[in-house]
Length: 134
Image (tube, rainbow, N blue to C red; front, side):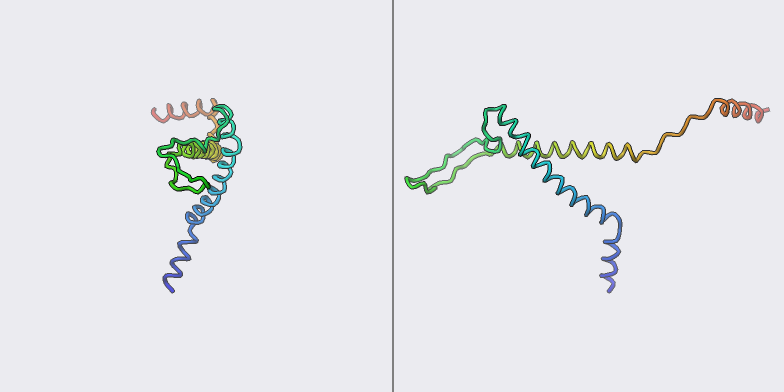
């Protein structure tokens, strides 16, 4: 029973629950950004670069060989740098949006700056301090 109690205490800690929520929200957010990149950003880049899908960009090392019936005899060997580019853009957009969200969160979370001490209070403190030294 000690292991079960210890596990309950582990799960009940705030950090574990917060981390689980962050992972779930992060995964959902990643899907949104991936859809944004695939649906909007990449088609714009494809239009600019000549109409080919960015994900289809590749450098063929060895072309595939097919017979007359269309059966693949040897698979194509290629470096698919378009997929890498698309994934890098996904990552950069996700990182940028997370940066903006954290920046806004920290701005809201920062304590309000203390109000400036009124001039009359400062003057009274100076008088008090000068009287103490006498």
